[in-house]
Image (tube, rainbow, N blue to C red; front, side, top):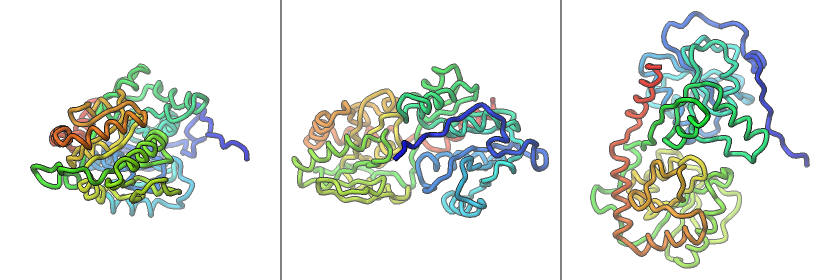
Length: 368
């Protein structure tokens, strides 16, 4: 079987990406932002939902916000995607476009992936260009053409918007300037199951964020750790969610597969420890677990330590099975430590809201 190749991008004009050579539609009547977003299968996916949340917040500021699906190959029209957004977002004011020839002039074109950055670079009808960066995507690939092409996008001269301080540092290493935002958790979904004494006296159920298709979430490491836990703590129920597994683990586990965002809070509140790894930028899972008062066990490293603080709001270890297992054992045996981390996580999250973080980014763009 031939090896599948990633497409090779080039510096070219907008029409080669399927866009119009002239501006379509009437002149701008209000500030307009076009978000270049990849197609989605799950509107609740963390990266996509964050983009939609920010865009819809901007739309509530009397601006026009267009979600342009830059890699559309499945949709003859935008109707189905528009319906999904309308159902997922309260008071959705976003417009979905799937045809680049219809895009109007805009105040800002916003790249949201490294692939979209090449299109935004070529898009001639925007006054400003931004890079909404949720991970250091050049790390997603082996060193080679694709990794180099992803890294090159950070030098395009766009203004940066980054999820967290580590990404801000990564972006600015390439000569640009960025404004970062902190990760928040929806307080209607993620909260402790009672106001006080929310740490149960005994560990009976643990959660693992399992996504084998996403290498940066370290699925293999998790499987090794969970095997050790199952062998040494058979009384502890292991719950795995995040993706429907194509195989059954070689230990007893409850497999929940993909879940909608609104259903995860109820799950987390039933768990006594949450395990989630991040080889690149921090995922939302530890943040949402902390908001629910669940002690978090994760790996160390600057990509997570901009928000996770070891033995303050989480327990961080080397990304080695025995080290993580030793961390689990420490948490299992030490109620006071679990309580301290649970309280630390809740305190970390209590004053961070999506509205405040989105307002910060909106002001940043406005000032620019």
